[in-house]
Image (cartoon, rainbow, N blue to C red; front, top):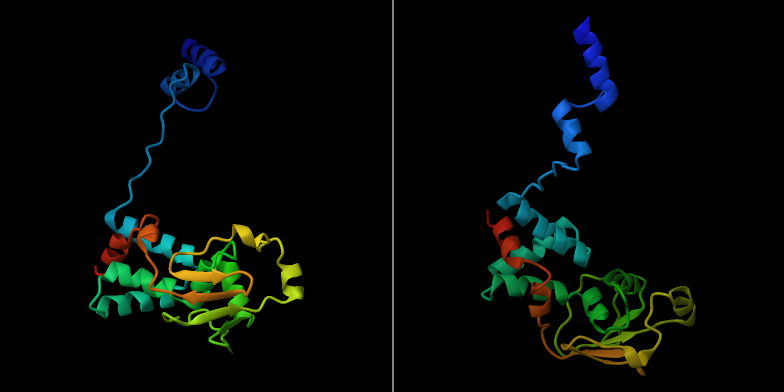
Length: 198
């Protein structure tokens, strides 16, 4: 009987849930922190691949296609892999600096507002070549619809080094292959190569 009374007093004092030691630790401010689990080697490689896919908005099928092509080339696999992705028409349009996101540039290409060497091309995955001229045909209706997405002040437009963009003509010329060094600071291409080479 005495033990039951003591147990009731303990419950009133420390609450019903958890062991006495856990409740004492909680009351004294000693809280056990959950340890953050470290990713396995496979997990790190998978995450690197997924992060890169997310940046470029690519499906697994097209992502793997670029890797396979890069791996078969005589150039450095990591560099060639990113160069192939950056030379897509949608990413080249994004490189003009006129659009805030790659998704917006892709949408403009898909809707047929881009000409390559004077011909309409609405395939975002199409590969551009050095010397080609890209013209943006932004209609007044489209501009109004997407005005929040456009960089309206053309003086502030800064294009990538491999693209020369003339805002007054809305034309861009491909000068060279893109420099992927900045992207390699965001994307761990080594882990991506390891993922597909496992």
